[in-house]
Length: 276
Image 1 (tube, rainbow, N blue to C red):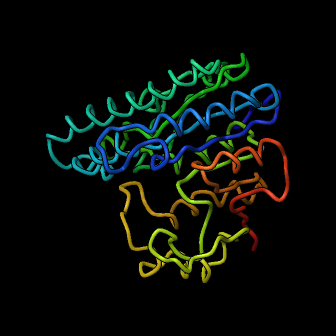
Image 2 (cartoon, rainbow, N blue to C red):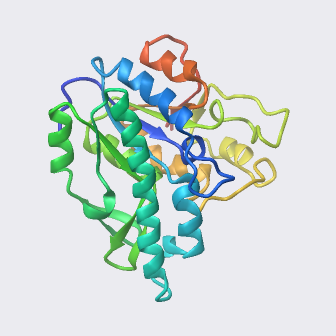
């Protein structure tokens, strides 16, 4: 039940693993990008409350994929993978928190492994009492995609894609900003299609449009262990129907996030809607 009431507009900031890590180098962070984003949040921390959710990138994804953790228990050696993946995510999380501390942000880590129970990969219970107390005292919780224990399949990967809408609902967020390595949602994958154009607004219930955008032909490239963009959008439908403002923007260009923090319209990036 979402009984928490923020004392300022609460924004969920999703830092994609592709912007805060180097995908080509195992367990290598992009400290300059992390610093740029957190610097902006520090600048506006008196105006908003923030909750940060970050992805796994080159820290957690290779290990989770290698040990096939997303589908639960299959073989004994996966237990090593659970430990290695969780520890890798702690390393990335600690890097982010330390950078924030140097910028004057009071970031506090909340690893899902210690507070979330899933059932068949879906969140069943999340004890948020400590997190909401931290928020009410002026701290900025930092959560991340993590290994969690599951009642049916022993363990699984809880991705940021499921974390973000769940927390947005429970914490009565007013806005979600998802920072990626592209400017927003494109007509095709801009990394492989020079003719791709940015879509300013997208209705996630428009199945024909989604099929066109996220077809295999338009989006050849790496497939994440936690799923592709179409699945990410599906997770957001319930909170979009509630009217929570949600944007996909570039995390590599500071002016994108700044336009939102300053309230300058039209906002940069892609606005997500759920219109019947």
